[in-house]
Structures are given as structure tokens and as C-alpha cells.
Amino acid sequence: MAKFSLFSPPLQVVGFIATRSGDPERGPMVRMRPDDALIRLVSDGELVRVVSERRSEIAVLEIDETVPRGGVVLRDVAGASPSEIVRIVKMETDTHRYA
Image 1 (cartoon, one colour):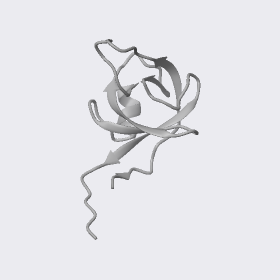
Image 2: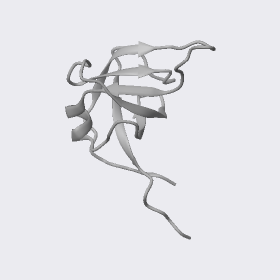
Image 3: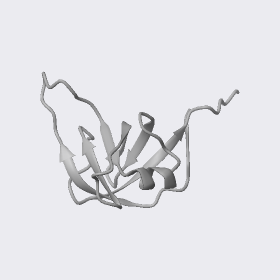
Image 4: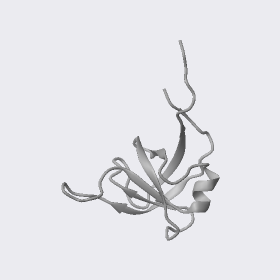
């Protein structure tokens, strides 16, 4: 089971992209500024958890300097909507738990 980092200041969804079947780029993705990513210790191409009030989903992180500070753009992330507050949480997959 993956563990999660506890430090994750809230971010506002400033854009949402919903793709269609046949689109060349599809699937859950989150774009954020490099400085917002640095605070959360996440990097480009990393899997992160997008946590909203309704649910959480795993997405690929993309660094994008055009996103406003404190905001994120989501693609195909279920359970999140524009102007909603979400948290982007680093997934710590290096830790193994043995019974």
C-alpha cells in the first residue's frame, strides 16, 4: 500500500480538460507551476494523488509555468470541477510494508 506525504497546501482548479475517445492525449493528468510542485516535493512525470472533497484519483504531474500560482489544470480527473479546491499529494511508493 502506498503512503502519502502529509504536507499539501490547497490549490484551486483553474482549468479542466475533458478528453474524448480518439484524442491523442488522454487520461488523468494535473498541471501545476514549478514552485507549487517544489513545495510538495513532486516532479514532472511523477504519479500524484489529486484529492477533492468527493474523492481522490491518481494522475500524472506535468510542470507548466503558465498555470497561475496556487492553481492547477486537471485533465480527465473524475470528482473534481473548475474552481474547486483540491490537494496534490506526493505518493511515496518506495516504502514497502511486510506482514
